[in-house]
Length: 340
Image (cartoon, rainbow, N blue to C red; front, side, top):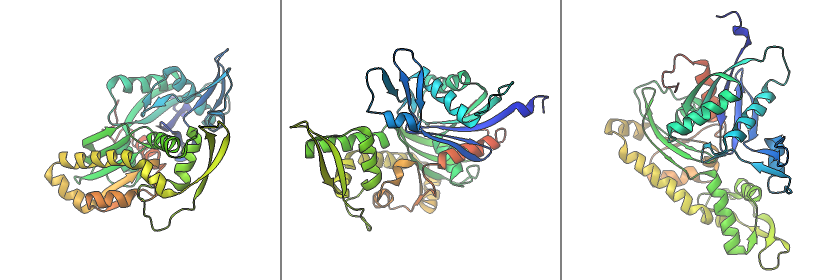
């Protein structure tokens, strides 16, 4: 222990396309949408997270909202640095004479390149991190769900996030094979926007699509406890006048079918690539689901029909990855699979 070790603060960051979650002292201290709002003229940050999300799609010429992450990776380096820095300030709001030296574990998609990895590390370092390690999302999800990843048993994890869907087979503390496809929650939103435009001649925004997905989103057109029909407000494409239409869950299931089929195809592909001994394990253990996208009604049922394997959903799918990143932080030296 160094003389100033008490100044070192350890935080775990789930840097997601849709939401960023920060864990400090085993508690979720920040859970905010990954978005910032800045003033165009001065470049000054006006809002971060939830406040910026409320402005999204409603700004005038001098304000722009930026989502720094796209498809699970940093698309706008400077905005990502601003966002990480502002969210760290939410964790440590008090100004001190010696700012804390930050030790971080950040989770990243398993399919990203070295350059994209470097961008994540650089953003964290620019935002004040002294030591950064990275962990792949499926590994973090498995740890967060309580799976012993160091055992010689095969487990399949599917993490459907905002920007990417990660499908990985894990054994002995490593990823044996993985497929990372850039089809996830954001694509579901665009599918809903497109469907509303084509079928109902109504223009809706991203936030409205997100709300529809949350309220009546479904992966199959027949579910046991169907949600009530949902009123959607938007702009009529023919007259330009705001209007309301009523939409049911079966329509949303139909609109999402193509994207979910691509995720299913990736799952079957990953199963094909799995060594036979691990396939035998997966037959017994089944498939584990995490991530916000897996919360779609009937998603587990649809996967079960496709694979004929038992499907287990995480207790809190949205935070499973963040929780696993927090556990990895506590075992900073024990988990050799953390990327330096």
